[in-house]
Length: 329
Image: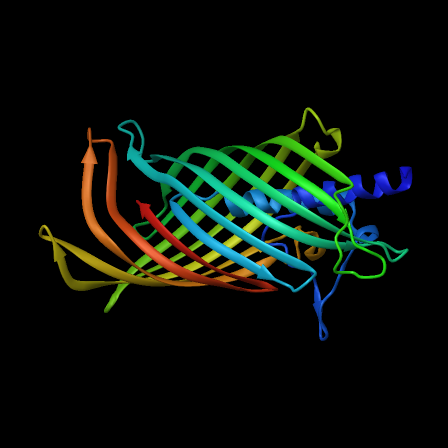
């Protein structure tokens, strides 16, 4: 019984921090079952850090993701966030002050089948809710008319509420689920500090505006769980994103203000993340959207150039998904 308890404790620990985007490695025969012995504490902590990065971005970012791997895994994840990003002028310098913030809520309903080297199988049921608040501050530095650099610091506070249980599958019939042999409830707090540098180049061409952007971020996440000490860790991760966006005007107007349309491609890469930690370390995003040219400036400080909406598809390195975003800039 003690050995079984140790096994269950470990697999629930893994499951509590398993991110929604974590798709296990596949071979030509399809989905590989998850071996409990192959998962290391470092994989777990890196997976959690990557999940926090994926779940905390400015704007109203909504997505629904379903993972169907037959008996091996059934996952449904929903996410939404509300945020802003702005910069305002400073009279005493040529630089602008940049600030952003967001609040994100997410829900995960997950079932994962784990096996052990002695051929035992356990089904873990996970229900998790996540709330995160992000605040950022920095400076927008114009280098030339077309090029600007924005270094800034972000602080992200996250709370994870987890309700999980594990069931051992029947030895004679793998579809028979025995009563839960382990249950756990946990609330984990995570604090992330990120240092980011954003480089953006834009140029008006004959048919519209071309924007090219590159961003590098180095973040450190520390967790605290007052009940389960094994959920405490301190991990760092570096992320690189590159984006190309094409903007063009339309003939549509609303209250004498015009709408523009845009299309974009974005690549996200986790530079120091082992692919086995969450099942991938990069993905692509292709989307299309529209911007409403608002151009207001409150108190001669905070300005809003436009309100936009866009939708995109995500793919690559075992990742599939869709995203819809409403944003202010």
